[in-house]
Every structure is written in C-alpha cells, then in structure tokens.
Length: 149
Image: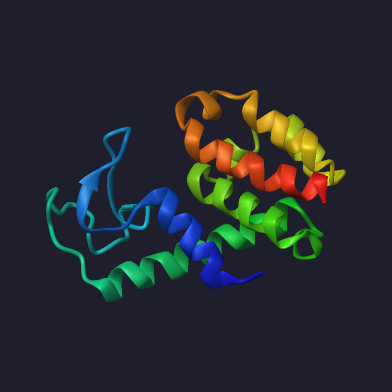
C-alpha cells in the first residue's frame, strides 16, 4: 500500500492541527486526529497549545503504524487486499479505533469474503454514515469501485 496516499486520505478526512483542540466528543486532540493520552507530552495542556510539525508527524507515524497493526490482526490477509480496500479499512480503523470498528460485523464479514459491494452497502447502513456521511460515502465509493472493477 502507498503510505503517502494513506496519509493524504486520513489527513484529508481528519484534518491536521498544529494545536490542541477538542474533538467532536470534547476530547483533547492534536495533529492528524491524535487523541491525547496520559502518556503523551501534550497531556494536560490547554486547548490552543501549539504542537510542532515534527511532533504532528511523530504522532501520526505512531498512530498509523498501530492502525496498520490492527488491520493485520483483524484481517490475516490484509496485505493481499486491493489498495483501495486497504486504504478504506485503514482509514476506518484510524477513525473508529479497533473496538468500534469491530461492531461493524456485517461489513467485516463482507470484507473477509471480498464482497466489496456488500461491504460498501453495510457502511451506508450505519450510524457512522448518518454521522459522517460525506466521509463514509467516500469510503463506500472506494469499495464499490473494486466491485465494479
């Protein structure tokens, strides 16, 4: 998979901030969708605290590696999926985290059987779709493209 393309997709979906902000559920976040954890140097800093480009890149590299590790744990053949499927699944896992992504039982079953059209349909039939329609529609279209061809 092209990691630069994955970064572009995730950064486009998540946005990139060089300061601490509160995400949609009021959790402190920075960089490319990095939820600040207790072991982060940013933990306890106030909203608006600046974060360097180098730190944003470091956080993203760590987060995307953890995400790809989760992809490979969930799908033992992940590396053999078409790139658009890899990008979509990695972006979804990045957004949701592994536990929440695990709730997409029918989508996961469709992915495992490489039924890309059904995997897309299952994304559209979700609360996630209603919450982040444009983003989830981009994921669904990427998967549908695989089904078509």
